[in-house]
Image (cartoon, rainbow, N blue to C red; front, top):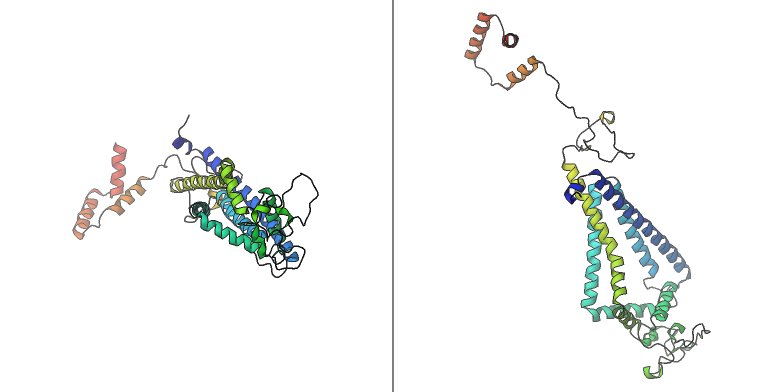
Length: 352
């Protein structure tokens, strides 16, 4: 079995890395485009239905930013791998490294400063609860989280007191209560009572254990992650490993292109001008961009025989300039023999 150094010098290794990176970038560019389209559609619908007070950063905006970044970065990698462009590949590699590094820093910061991170999430969720009925996207997400993780609010159930429809000084039917997604369901499939959380915010936690979930969603999610370490690690790997794969592929392919550009059989069309008809493109592939053994320019097997006169003229050009006395001696020798240097050289060649 050939070693890695021998394998990476073959054209098959080049083809494999090139098209693997191209397919990788194409898949993620399509995913980014889909996320971007979903985000744009969700934002258009949100703008139609929300009120002017809804200033909370909607999930649709997050989807738009995520899809735009994924699509732009992936297109750069796709074009760079297809056209063997070292600049675009280097840009693609650097952006992936920066994104992965930022995610690792964010994760480490969240683990080290857990209390400050929880406080930040709590303030963000409280801001979202304040505009709960203004942003349907955030409302649906929070309802899903409260039902999935059996929780209510951000830090606790009393976070709902910041909403104008739920705070205890209100006069509406929802005053001093929580949404029905915070209620405990005793039977699966039972009819939902939308006023099951009525008059619960002014009561103590001990009296509400059979009515609503009193634990906040931040603590519920943290507890679920600590109880399901395998799923948590799998989720982190699902986010980080594809980015790491793109970094490895782009790094290998970029090093291959650097080595190929420094080899003797590669032609830089930006520095040297050639006519397209003069190139030997046999075996170059359908896209006219694949390398082949021996390069693209026809190299003569051996130099043709040269005329002795041309060789002698080149030697004369390399000789230093002669002085006046040397020229006189040369003229006397020519007059004595009647032959010039070229004729003398041909005479000696015939004699031998």
